[in-house]
Length: 141
Image (cartoon, rainbow, N blue to C red; front, side, top):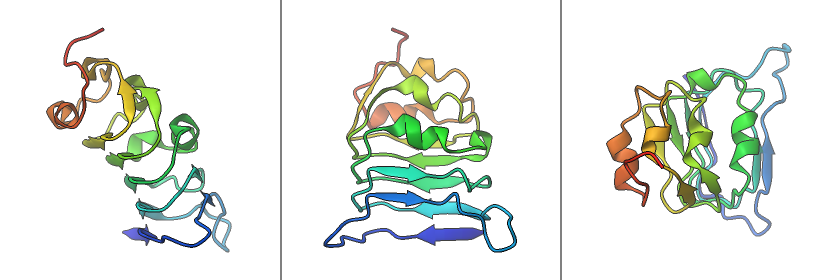
């Protein structure tokens, strides 16, 4: 397992974005499976060079355009754990539907709207865990 952990880098001039699409010296994509970038001040992240990503921890940043970050993941069916809690995200919960193998999803501290029933493609997801951390409705609406 290959892991990148740059959690808690409260720099004077915070990291605003990270571009991980750069391939390694052999020209092959990154082998990263886990990325931890919580407790920074990220506003964007490009993950297009990380096709093996299984765990992504983005909590406590300043992300507002989650769609851009999630769209940069070229192999969404690999992702199993996603933490985007405590950012500046305002989205519908259906934005997570492409991540069919998600087992854990952390969205607390954002403005996520909709019902967990909208996550129809996520059979492995613990939906009660998602409900417990939000104001989401368990019913379709």
